[in-house]
Image (cartoon, rainbow, N blue to C red; front, side, top):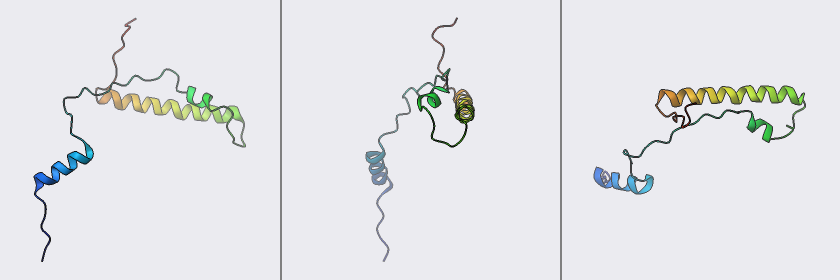
Length: 88
């Protein structure tokens, strides 16, 4: 014998209770890129690596800057960049 399956409507209701309701009319969050991605690296202090600290900081800063560029490009492509409030 096969198991009885729940009706699709009942399954949808269970999913909504678990995941929450889909709010299609909610305004998406706008992204404002940071002007100083290296602030995260500096806030960590001296990194415990057996290399020259300035070299490590420079490379980590480059990684964070690239991450900001990629996130900004993705946000722009999806229309999620925040408008500047002060135009000039």
